[in-house]
Image 1 (cartoon, helix red, strand yellow):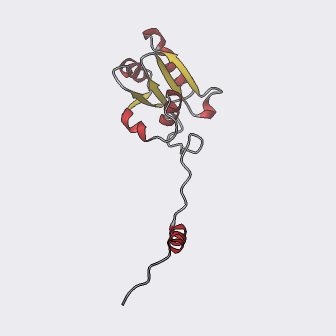
Image 2 (cartoon, rainbow, N blue to C red):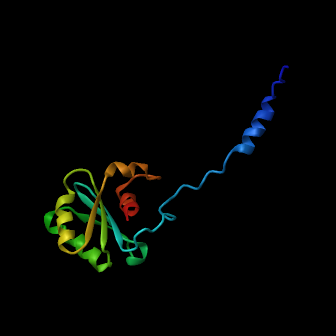
Length: 134
């Protein structure tokens, strides 16, 4: 018993009906809010990007310098915004002084692995990274 070969047009129509609709990629606008009192911090050698929930401040993303005397400014701002938990991303040792300051102020800092942020969709900038961490 021989089987008749299917025409290419029939194969395409079968594939088209079997395709699943793709889900819309998650962006900053539609990401779930897991912790409403959380902030995200992306720490670099020269700048610290800090993000809070949009309703907490008119400018939910702030940029701070990394000099020792400037490290208290983000802690003050986070306390003024009512933040209790902070997710911090850093590649290196730049996170240690800020971590200690946040802990002294009664905030709960959590250090996250920077490699895990590579799976975040969209363009990867420090501005966006701190918002994703939040």
